[in-house]
Length: 215
Length: 274
Ligand SMILES: [Zn+2]
Image 1 (tube, each protein chain N blue to C red):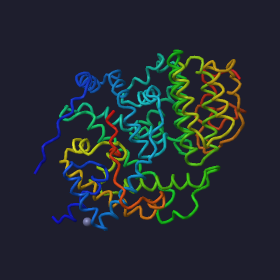
Image 2: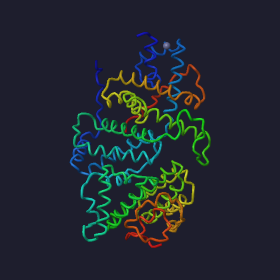
Image 3: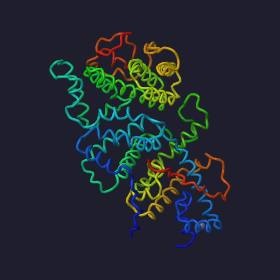
Image 4: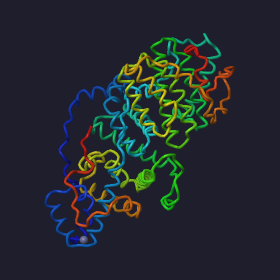
């Protein structure tokens, strides 16, 4: 059973983008430069959220665009370029997170972190928590990981995730639900300790937490 | 599916406000009377708070990014055309270049091109850069490469300081300063501001190099007096990491340079007389 696809989002500059893609595929580097200019910020944001380090984020973004450049000759405009880009970026960043050796393990969090001069204690704790979060996301089973990476690192909405992964919206909901409960379990008390406790009947804010619009 | 099961399966979309109005109302009705779902929802909201706290990326220059990327795009043979270089005119260089190309292309991954100062491939990368500079005879081409290299040094400094390797970070930053003093006069204010931003992000390397660079940029931007090219000579000898793993090819005889990796730029035609 497949839910009807959400309305395809007409994005501006579609024809221009198509031209840039086709020319890039033929090796036109100036066209590719314009394509990179359009999407540089997007890919860097995804990578930075995933890695928390600008140097590594830029490295991964470079790999993403290299992959895109090599892959362009096979791109047939069957799906929006940005969806393809998100998938390439999502895979690249989670691969990169897995390659980064965690300095501390979740079990060893109470050990003092490697000394960082002049870092206030809570900054260190926050840093470690974020590192732990990134690693746990990267370690999720692939179909969970992809959905979570698109939500957390790429800040896509549920609908955008559905379109990007080409799965029904209901599936996105189920996957994110299971994935986040799993993630929450694995992160254990770390998460609760990191913030003031919430009143039990807190309602989620009306603001959509992740989706801040594309591009 | 039971109401409890239904609600439990939709708690994350509920917490993310991704449900339709009816679904949302149904989940809410159930959760208010179900302690287990309430607890699970609280846990998911806590997780969301952590996920949303992941820092957004600082601004980054797409121009510098492109310069670096362009150098890595598959483009067989065009590397040899940089600056009108003709193989044979400088046989030693051509040989060294061939070695570098064989090494970098051979791995298929351009590993040296992105390696960091704590990598065994790093000396190879610096050698590659040196060759690139040596081959760029046109001032504009050389300028562009130097901009790219300045960005690369900053990236290294960031990465090294992120790993707590402050000596290596300082070495990269010192090399950055040297490059900056050469390129600053030709940089646009936007580019200068972009460098300034990147420097301020380098909080862990709180030393004289960063201040030197900032001062240079500020003066170039006309915020304070004359440029201070003396920053380029901040050549204290620190940051000797694995520089010794360089096999020495093509960089003999730069005694007293004092730069762990700075010898990379120490003998090309672009050397600024100190
Ligand atoms: Zn329940």
